Length: 143
Image (cartoon, rainbow, N blue to C red; front, side, top):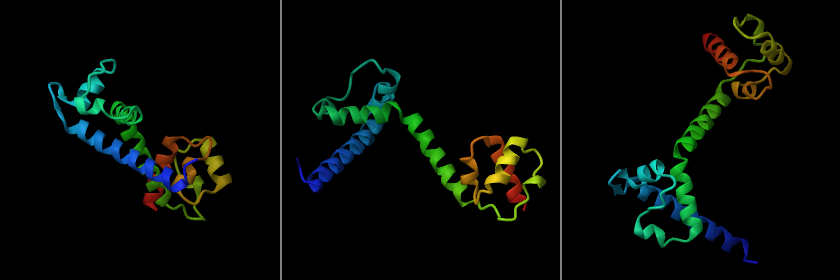
């Protein structure tokens, strides 16, 4: 078994290569626009740049994964950023949830029971939906 440092170095090199090739394929011109556009438009067509074919299979698969699922990955990244921002929106300890007009009764009850300290915690309460979180955020901003 390889020492942990050797494994870490190999993994870091793999990540570096994947990122480099994703960037290259996103920018390398092809008749459809870029090679990335071509790959996304033709998922069953296995045509790729010649140099790319020389890479180890694990690197090629990683690159193709990031290119094919770019839209989904970008959306998930934006969601993570929004959730991180929600963690920064504090809810005062003495906040009166009853004064918030428009909250569903289930959400109102859960918020009063749990008393989250920020909007991120409120978003993780079962039964509190995104609409209620938006209403709560607007009420917090008014305060």
